[in-house]
Image 1 (cartoon, rainbow, N blue to C red):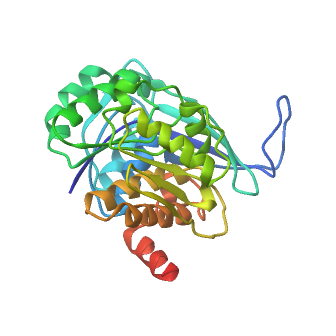
Image 2 (cartoon, rainbow, N blue to C red):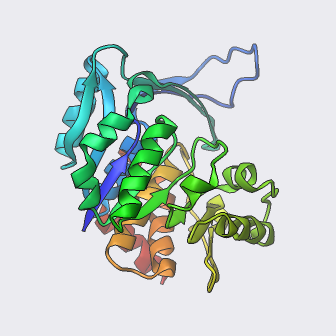
Length: 305
């Protein structure tokens, strides 16, 4: 099954601290590390490790971070043919604080990600049309997201959108989506419903269906995820683990989700597979380094059975 991902590439610079600093506050004693990141890249790596055949459409800068990213994609067996090298902007960078509970605070300098264009996507039109699933996020310009969604929809390709970072979306884009996967805060921004539990998540999901989406999957961390279609309302519980770093949990969820979906699993099986992968990811530090392999996900599912 062929998966195409349109999205961002960043280098994550991570400081592990006792707690997230307040405005104007300096905290000493942090531990520094770097890791490959970017929501698109994280999802591409997660999907590949979960067993997917992935082509990635993106931009990097002509710098050491960009060169390292391309090497990493090659080592992860990701098709990087449609990743452009940008000579005008540097590669994207994310500065991340992670506290002792695994919670994080992130600032992103988009760099080359912000120059992924309508033209870049159009040049990859044939590979999008030949895909089984297109997965996207919102760390690249909206014009590239809308263009890719339009190409895929017209070709009968299932379009999955992880609406992060959160921003308002119009019904024209939403009507091209097969699945949308917001977390609580993203669902609230899209629907004006305060999502605090599964009943409020269902209300928000129903609004997303009314706006044109076929399937709404609202992720709620350790609580699990809500699946909502016109015919189905289902809660899929999360997995209890010792969290170290939640940085890429949503990305791993989405990358694993599209693999299970491409393999023809039911929506319930698909979300359970993605929940297992996301739970495993928070037990390790870093974004892409935390994405589990297929065998690890299957082992987690067997434990839950």
